Image (cartoon, rainbow, N blue to C red; front, side, top):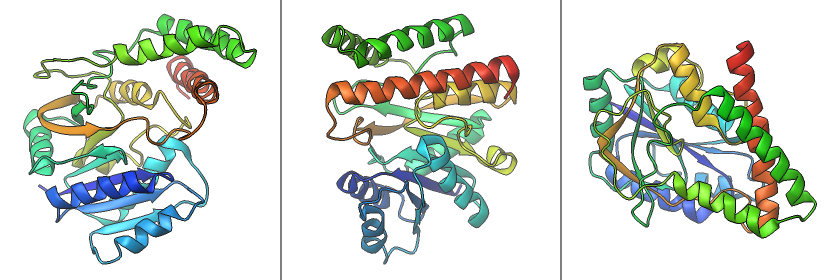
Length: 283
């Protein structure tokens, strides 16, 4: 089984270097494509320079910031056009893989379980598990409620109203998606955590994108889950493959909490609207 990796990079050079160094140790023969999402600070060029001696590492530098879905899709399409692989793993640059044989473990599991899209056990440095993001997609009424409430929170944040309480609410909700212990065996048709997703040869042959290219940031996992269900792709989690997700290393690094949350909330509202449009109108 042959596996290629796509890593999305944006400005955090040290994080990307750590990601690549760990990956090259456990998957030295795999093709690796790094996509610099128009960092504009020379870090993409520095990644290219540092790994110029690695024949299996390619660095693609976008001429604009395409966001999460389209940025990852650039690397996915590069793999599809240039390599013949059984599996492509699309991952954040803040994902660290140290498991020996990771590529074979997840690729063989997907083949044995007839999965088209698969995620590993995604674990934080604190030992909390992030996969699955949701056991099953949220019903539409819950998406509408979520979008409405985020619109209210966004207005209140911009007006400096109840800032501390709102920020605390977001932190609590984020933590609720992480678990200390979980049995990942047999989990299928779930919403996978977007930090590390593997796609099969069959999916690769049929689709020109890894994530549905309708968002800039956030909710890509939910939209992908809806898309896979509509197209009858099987999704699941490989319980024996594991990665460490450092988390929070690439979104407005250095920004104040309020500014960061305003940006994130505005993007979530836009993405949820795209999800609803796909559900209601198929576009």
